[in-house]
Image (cartoon, rainbow, N blue to C red; front, side):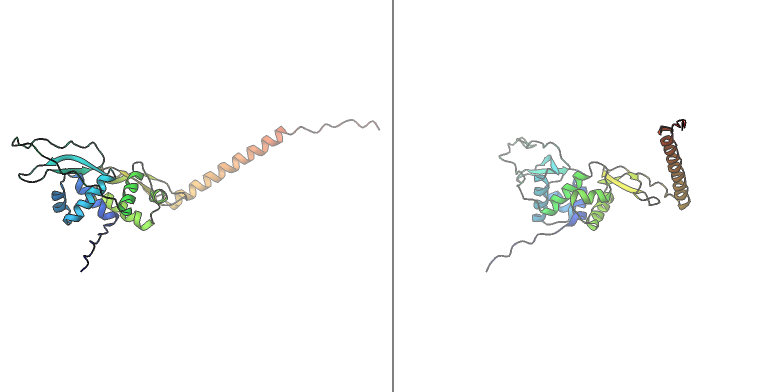
Length: 226
């Protein structure tokens, strides 16, 4: 009887955000990550191997258990790997350390990394969509999850292209508190700004017309000798 192929679990952007948040709390070996994340043995190794291949996590230490292979402990975000130990705490030499297995990342995880790279600088959801090619719904879910797990924050607020719209949040990687949302411009303030702007345009237009008259040579009347 043919053996069934293991089914790949689709975590979604929000799921990857939660797992990355777990990996930021401290170094996690595959066994420790499996317990903290509530995933199976195969899924834990696949996620860690894929994130490591993409440079999203690095080796921050090594777990050494008696009579067990030495395992790397990963922590979230890029960094320099800690070299594998050569001697156990009891003084016995380590024959070999279990290095992470190279695993080809899924397209979804690769897209998640692209999203994180986009958030290295402040970006609105529209800008994230343009940079990643993701749908509005995917970006919304991903950003909401990143903010929830304190991987990203609202770095600043900007005005919308049309007057009178609510301020627009711009997101960036960081665990600090989000910037406070500024008050929305009232309809009266929008109308006042419009009238002030129109009056300024009319004033400048009038000055421009007057300057045109000044630059036009006056007509010279010649005497009539007839």
